[in-house]
Image 1: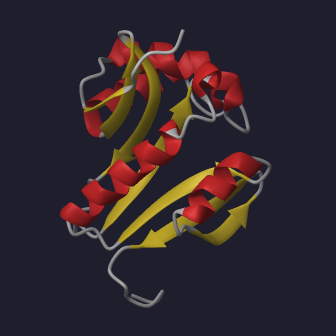
Image 2: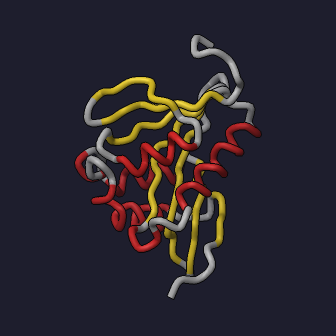
Length: 155
Protein backbone atom coordinates (compact mmCIF):
# COMPACT_ATOMS: atom_id res chain seq x y z
CA UNK A 1 0.00 0.00 0.00
CA UNK A 2 3.02 2.28 0.19
CA UNK A 3 3.91 4.39 -2.80
CA UNK A 4 6.94 6.38 -3.75
CA UNK A 5 7.93 9.15 -1.40
CA UNK A 6 8.43 12.52 -3.05
CA UNK A 7 10.71 15.05 -1.38
CA UNK A 8 9.92 18.77 -1.59
CA UNK A 9 10.97 21.99 0.09
CA UNK A 10 8.49 24.59 1.27
CA UNK A 11 5.37 23.37 -0.45
CA UNK A 12 3.20 22.51 2.58
CA UNK A 13 0.51 24.97 3.60
CA UNK A 14 -0.06 26.04 7.20
CA UNK A 15 -3.12 23.75 7.31
CA UNK A 16 -1.14 20.77 5.97
CA UNK A 17 1.64 21.38 8.50
CA UNK A 18 -0.91 21.59 11.32
CA UNK A 19 -2.65 18.41 10.19
CA UNK A 20 0.69 16.58 10.03
CA UNK A 21 1.80 17.81 13.46
CA UNK A 22 -1.53 16.77 15.01
CA UNK A 23 -1.15 13.31 13.45
CA UNK A 24 2.36 12.99 14.95
CA UNK A 25 1.64 14.83 18.23
CA UNK A 26 1.86 11.88 20.59
CA UNK A 27 5.10 10.62 19.00
CA UNK A 28 6.94 13.72 20.23
CA UNK A 29 8.57 13.20 23.63
CA UNK A 30 7.21 14.98 25.57
CA UNK A 31 3.99 15.23 23.52
CA UNK A 32 3.95 18.31 21.32
CA UNK A 33 0.65 19.68 22.63
CA UNK A 34 2.13 19.79 26.13
CA UNK A 35 4.67 22.35 24.88
CA UNK A 36 2.97 24.38 22.13
CA UNK A 37 -0.40 25.26 20.65
CA UNK A 38 -0.17 23.18 17.50
CA UNK A 39 -2.13 25.51 15.19
CA UNK A 40 -0.06 28.54 16.27
CA UNK A 41 3.14 26.51 15.91
CA UNK A 42 2.11 25.39 12.41
CA UNK A 43 1.54 29.04 11.50
CA UNK A 44 4.97 30.03 12.77
CA UNK A 45 6.61 27.19 10.85
CA UNK A 46 4.73 28.07 7.66
CA UNK A 47 5.70 31.73 7.97
CA UNK A 48 9.30 31.53 9.17
CA UNK A 49 10.84 28.09 8.72
CA UNK A 50 12.21 26.20 5.78
CA UNK A 51 10.34 22.91 5.56
CA UNK A 52 11.94 19.81 4.12
CA UNK A 53 8.99 17.58 3.31
CA UNK A 54 8.22 13.98 2.40
CA UNK A 55 4.96 13.41 0.54
CA UNK A 56 3.22 10.20 -0.43
CA UNK A 57 -0.07 10.02 -2.27
CA UNK A 58 -0.71 13.74 -1.75
CA UNK A 59 -0.20 13.48 2.02
CA UNK A 60 2.58 15.06 4.08
CA UNK A 61 4.17 12.03 5.74
CA UNK A 62 7.38 13.56 7.08
CA UNK A 63 8.80 16.98 7.80
CA UNK A 64 11.91 18.68 9.12
CA UNK A 65 11.32 22.36 9.83
CA UNK A 66 14.34 24.58 10.46
CA UNK A 67 14.95 28.25 11.03
CA UNK A 68 17.81 29.80 9.07
CA UNK A 69 17.23 33.29 10.46
CA UNK A 70 20.30 33.86 12.61
CA UNK A 71 21.16 37.55 12.04
CA UNK A 72 24.82 36.67 11.47
CA UNK A 73 23.88 33.73 9.24
CA UNK A 74 25.98 31.45 11.39
CA UNK A 75 23.46 29.04 12.81
CA UNK A 76 20.32 27.12 12.08
CA UNK A 77 17.79 25.65 14.48
CA UNK A 78 15.74 22.56 13.72
CA UNK A 79 12.41 23.17 15.40
CA UNK A 80 10.57 20.02 14.34
CA UNK A 81 11.29 16.54 13.01
CA UNK A 82 8.29 14.32 12.45
CA UNK A 83 7.29 11.27 10.44
CA UNK A 84 3.91 9.57 10.52
CA UNK A 85 4.07 6.40 12.59
CA UNK A 86 2.84 4.44 9.53
CA UNK A 87 5.99 5.58 7.68
CA UNK A 88 8.54 5.10 10.46
CA UNK A 89 11.56 2.92 9.79
CA UNK A 90 11.78 3.81 6.10
CA UNK A 91 14.67 6.30 6.43
CA UNK A 92 12.45 9.32 5.82
CA UNK A 93 13.65 11.28 8.87
CA UNK A 94 17.27 10.51 7.96
CA UNK A 95 16.76 11.69 4.37
CA UNK A 96 15.00 14.87 5.49
CA UNK A 97 17.73 15.66 8.03
CA UNK A 98 20.42 15.12 5.38
CA UNK A 99 18.61 17.57 3.09
CA UNK A 100 18.40 20.10 5.93
CA UNK A 101 22.13 19.76 6.69
CA UNK A 102 23.03 20.16 2.99
CA UNK A 103 20.90 23.31 2.86
CA UNK A 104 22.62 24.70 5.96
CA UNK A 105 26.04 24.02 4.43
CA UNK A 106 24.97 25.75 1.20
CA UNK A 107 23.99 28.79 3.28
CA UNK A 108 27.40 28.66 5.00
CA UNK A 109 25.88 28.07 8.43
CA UNK A 110 28.47 27.20 11.05
CA UNK A 111 26.21 25.10 13.27
CA UNK A 112 22.82 23.44 13.47
CA UNK A 113 21.11 22.90 16.80
CA UNK A 114 18.03 21.02 17.88
CA UNK A 115 16.33 19.83 21.05
CA UNK A 116 15.15 16.29 21.58
CA UNK A 117 13.50 14.44 24.44
CA UNK A 118 16.01 12.70 26.70
CA UNK A 119 13.87 9.53 26.45
CA UNK A 120 13.57 9.59 22.64
CA UNK A 121 16.15 6.89 21.95
CA UNK A 122 15.37 6.54 18.23
CA UNK A 123 15.81 10.28 17.61
CA UNK A 124 18.96 10.42 19.73
CA UNK A 125 20.43 7.58 17.63
CA UNK A 126 19.40 9.29 14.38
CA UNK A 127 20.98 12.60 15.33
CA UNK A 128 24.07 10.92 16.76
CA UNK A 129 24.63 9.00 13.51
CA UNK A 130 24.48 12.32 11.67
CA UNK A 131 27.19 13.81 13.89
CA UNK A 132 25.07 15.82 16.35
CA UNK A 133 26.60 15.93 19.82
CA UNK A 134 24.92 16.70 23.15
CA UNK A 135 25.52 20.29 24.25
CA UNK A 136 23.41 20.42 27.39
CA UNK A 137 20.49 18.86 29.18
CA UNK A 138 17.45 20.66 30.55
CA UNK A 139 15.29 17.62 31.29
CA UNK A 140 13.14 16.44 29.69
CA UNK A 141 15.10 17.83 26.69
CA UNK A 142 18.68 17.66 25.51
CA UNK A 143 20.21 20.29 23.20
CA UNK A 144 22.31 18.79 20.42
CA UNK A 145 24.52 20.53 17.91
CA UNK A 146 26.33 19.81 14.68
CA UNK A 147 29.35 21.91 13.69
CA UNK A 148 29.45 22.53 9.94
CA UNK A 149 32.57 24.67 9.69
CA UNK A 150 35.07 22.31 11.29
CA UNK A 151 35.83 24.94 13.95
CA UNK A 152 36.26 24.34 17.63
CA UNK A 153 33.34 24.52 20.04
CA UNK A 154 34.37 27.97 21.28
CA UNK A 155 33.93 29.12 17.71
